[in-house]
Length: 140
Image 1 (cartoon, rainbow, N blue to C red):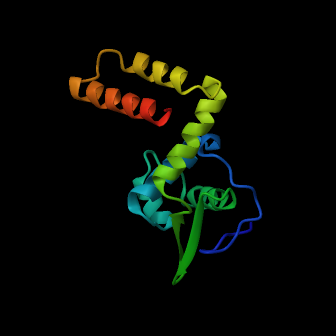
Image 2 (image 1 turned 90 degrees about the horizontal axis):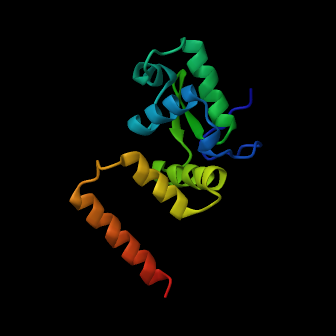
């Protein structure tokens, strides 16, 4: 299995966070929470964790996919994300928007509002209103 050391380039095309399995998402969430982590530290953060070797295998897969990189710290590898959580979230959101909402922000926002029902506070609604007003201003 080819690994990607810090600062190195992967031969594989980077994949969208949209294409992560449930376990891969759990691992990425743990690494994002910790900032950087060894396989053991990641495993400790996971709900109902798989075996040590499974976690190490999935870390390697995430590294091949371009989501993680590692550095050697003594006998262990320490992994960190290749991009900031917000950037990864935006990339995932772009994929969801394209795949499920025909690249329509309006359809996606309508679905989010429908899911939240009446749970939005007045403060949240006011913030959303300001975001819409800002978007209107950008179109001028």
